[in-house]
Image (cartoon, rainbow, N blue to C red; front, top):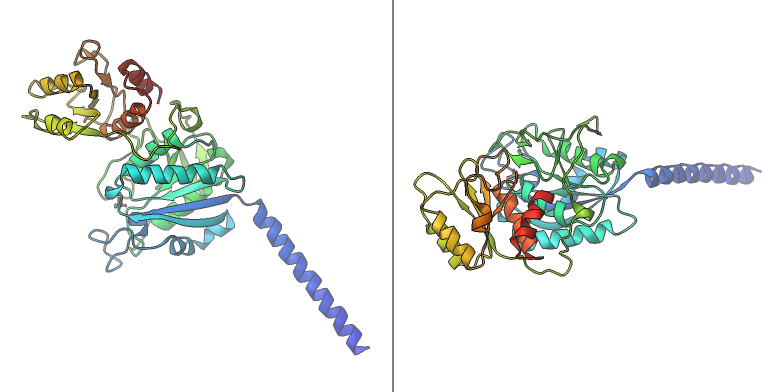
Length: 359
Ligand code: SIN
């Protein structure tokens, strides 16, 4: 009798536990699946003390430790992590971008991945974001995130930024918006955002064109549409590329000459972005070197070091006559990315100009 009672009690307990586990599984199954690809940077950095916010070591904490530091993420997404690289982002190279983009495309092609977060150093985060914006072949969200304070600092911004990024990457509202940057409770479009302060937490800005949304309480709120083509709408395919054409930037300043332009061409540049003054103006001592480079087949893009505004075609130089391309509103570092990708398709400057007005 006693034996029967205890068997009944045990099976009731097992039944209850089974229901609990099934309910928990059903709950987890409803959450989006977000993969975090870790590449290093300050978000994975450590300092000697909690007040060390400069002079720390970037890229030391692994992806599993980053995930464990933010257990709140498990309530909003099924999170998995991969360590793709462990570098400070000043060392990011074309080869890293190709490897990262290929991995992103493979993961997003899987039905069980709903979105991707890429943890990244902030110094070149905007460049990686724009590169991916042009070569990712999916409408699923890809969100780049970093931090300005290392993980060991007082008020480290990494955990909240990562929590926000995971929420954003798992949100249906972020589908089809191109590659996004989530920093400081703000959402930025890859094309327009730039790092604008050397050290403060509000460093990512898209000054005049503006951010596209906020993240509040883990929920994204969008206020603007991205109008330039991106991701599945672009003509770029890196799936079979092992390298990108050499493109460099020559920076203009008072008293600049032709040394940098000539050296870059001699070093094998297939394209040159000139970071001109003002409206992309060409200093008289640099212009002949650019003209000579173009005659050798190097594609020249006129951009501006100013940081805002359109570089007017046939404005400060006769681009039609010189056979130069203008960068539109792209910063020199982003114009370099688009020119590299353009050169994988064509060396026709009219076509390349079209691309600069499209992306
Ligand atoms: C880096 O870009 O890797 C270092 C700086 C940072 O992440 O803020």
